[in-house]
Amino acid sequence: MNGLLFFVAQTYYKNQRKTAKELLIIVNMLKTGDQFRHRFCYSQEDVEQYARVSGDVNPLHIDPEAGRNSMFGRNIMHGFLGASVFTKIFGALWMADGHVYLEQTLKWLRPMFADVEYEAVVTVVEVFPAKNRVRYECAIYDPATGDKTISGEALLLNKKQYVWPEGTVS
Image 1 (tube, rainbow, N blue to C red):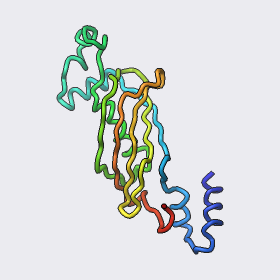
Image 2 (cartoon, helix red, strand yellow):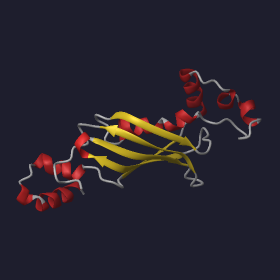
Image 3 (cartoon, rainbow, N blue to C red):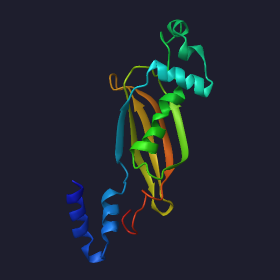
């Protein structure tokens, strides 16, 4: 597919004398609406390890009896553990080379549980070409119910990946 896109970009920009590197950037550059999806699941062992590392040893997260007796009927995952998937996405999966986190907002909408599969979705909301920055909408869904569990936004800087030749972003 990228070969076809490269040919289209090469044809479209042929009179502007773009280099091969500039054409590859045009083919791969982000635009509003682009999305990345990632399914993930944390185990109860992951939750317990996060409790040890973070120091948040609230029984609601790690004590099965406290979880059963809670309004949730079982242990819930730490909110920041669930949201940590965004650092995985930006740090290792989605145009990761060179990302620097500048901002992250989060709203916890529903509890998340160990051993349940979730889907994180990041969507390009706004592009700032002059500053090599992109604002993303960040959300986590429970695919079984369609419920959104976490929502927020992130602003990232990336001088390696977020490069747009002049005149290619309106």
